[in-house]
Image (cartoon, helix red, strand yellow):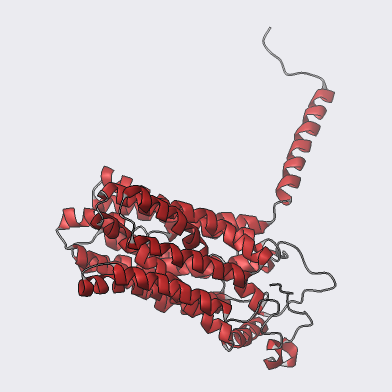
Length: 462
């Protein structure tokens, strides 16, 4: 006799009951995961997929030299163009994020990623790389840097430090993963096939991810993580009125001295660590360290920075953003003094560990201090301008180091400049307003009556 299904209907009903219970239990567990954490997960995947491609530029220099015979100087112009393009575009991307939503700007970034990698794959002249990396992939980087941080502030009323910390950690380890991926592709295939694979593979994955991305909790009928505050009723405005509110609020934010000081602070911090990131390998090799060991110094400081990229926003949220940022700027600047006397391999690695702590924390708390100064609401313009300052700082640090070396024939003045800019950044931070109050409490005074709300700004702490 062959096997027959159990004839007892009670057994079937029991199986159905058990199966339904399991499904219901899974749904309950999933419903307990706020979509804010899904947004952070999607943002991390976007960073890993394409947000770090310009930061991994160093890995493509030698293959381009070998395959096309272009000079290193001509190739690296693309990186400078990318930094300048990102600096110019970031404020506009920030304003567009406030006006049109982050999801649309991410689609723009993914589109530029497709175009940039396609042009790179078909490149026959060095200026094609300038256009691919400098313009289109520079725009991609700006879109991701501005949109993802801005969106995170919308989705969290509580635990913003943890969310931003995870995001910043991904932005730190992203270049390592992207460098490895590009290196493997270039080792297995020629330049063209490698970049076609990168564009189609990562670009398609990023497109799929953006479809699940939402700019604000209200797009899904949700409250930010942490819920609504006691005694408040969230008002809903029409799109037209919300645009008026965002415009007036952004103008109020931009009128504060803290707005421009934060741009300056980001510029100074990035000048400081750009010098170290770009010139630590030449400095180490000049001191007699082997090229492979010198490259390991750079990898070590990047790895260590991942820890403080996560911890700094958490500490800033609990202990105070202004003080935490100032400490990290000091920890980024003072260790650079070690380079005046460091001359063997182990001491360079010790420097990498110590410097990596401050380097990772230098830029990680900006979303927290923005929330403390400006409360909840649109921050795209603020992040856009601060990102612009950061990218100008990266471009300045990369350029000024070579100029000073050419003039003095050593890196002493370059090292001193790195120390000075970090410490000046710390002083600037401490000259800013304390973070125990929102700076734009009266921003709604400039609104028409129908656009005003009854909500009070988010409380702040120092």
